[in-house]
Image (cartoon, rainbow, N blue to C red):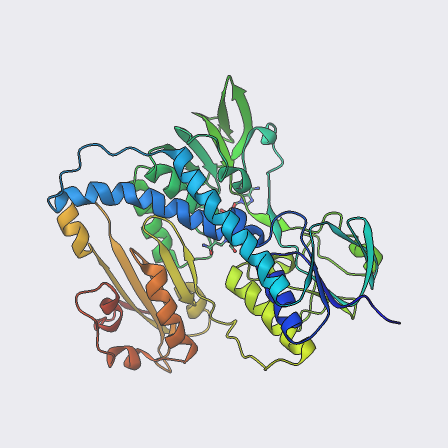
Length: 451
Ligand code: NDP
């Protein structure tokens, strides 16, 4: 049988665009369907616009900090509409760039929804196409909790398009999105309440970081409601009331659900293709991203494994190379660095203390200090740095930081951990003075041994 395409990719986000582009550059006949926006969540309603909003929020704090350095800054105000317009211009530029990347590589793009008719046939908009291999890269969508009044709340997709900045926001959750938007709204002047189920925010991160994050959020004036949940949302005129499970009521302009994301498989017709999914909707794949149907693959957030853009692009790139003869790559998926763009940010690579102790005895090196900028600015902002070191081998198993520039610093440390650096390697590295980063190579005194 002759197929219309060697490879058809469903979804034009980080994973799908990379996979389609690399496959086309290897000479494959490639089609890519995207129904909503090129670049997917990351470019349109995720990482990129989020970082623009974080930077906007930080300017306010920096203007305040500048006073400590002798600047006479009398009035600081912010224009939300101007920020959203500037953000939208940048997103439109990137959106077009992603589409162009595919077309430039020779792929055919379809601005339409794709649905499986059988394992080799898809309905793409009004067209019916066939492909030898098909890649599902449809990503995820924010979840709305199943509670009364849920429709009165917003999700992260909406947060990027609010007509005006709310004065009071209640955010549900304490994962990446909740903590990042708490900092954004607070930094832009809103009152922010963070309601979450755990005793500390950011379940899954190192406990010392989580503790420091709770203190950092509180120091910014964000009110924390740990071990709590929202039972219902009520309308109150133009405003909203978040009703907590224990009966407390919080009035706000806006209730923001940042309670996780789920794989986006609705309407894909997985059954028609014989592709199996977990109860969560996650498409089940083996280590080569192959689904239960031999010619169909799935990459990125729709598999719900490590839901981060650089992982999605690495998966898309590797799959295209494997299918169409590119070079073999040896990504280190065992130590994927990640960052939470809170204010200040947090970043980690490798194991948490808890994870490391489960494997054997560890030495912990930890430091907490006020960065030089804030000894002058007077802002109550602490930096925390931590290394988790395997006692037997001396290898650094985890590096963690909360503080300014943490993501920039952690990217470099991720290389060291990928190379298997030991604490002795850190110790023989010369620092750059005066920086915060140099603390990672001058942590001489063990804080504790565990296990
Ligand atoms: P996360 O999985 O990080 O966090 C979800 C949060 O929602 C948790 O605090 C969770 O609580 C809470 N939650 C889940 N269900 C309920 C419920 N029924 N009631 C109350 N609370 C609930 O999800 P996010 O939405 O923040 O982000 C999704 C993913 O996107 C992240 O995991 C990450 O992979 C990616 N991302 C990465 C970013 C980055 O790299 N900077 C930025 C944004 C997103 P509990 O802990 O109790 O389960």
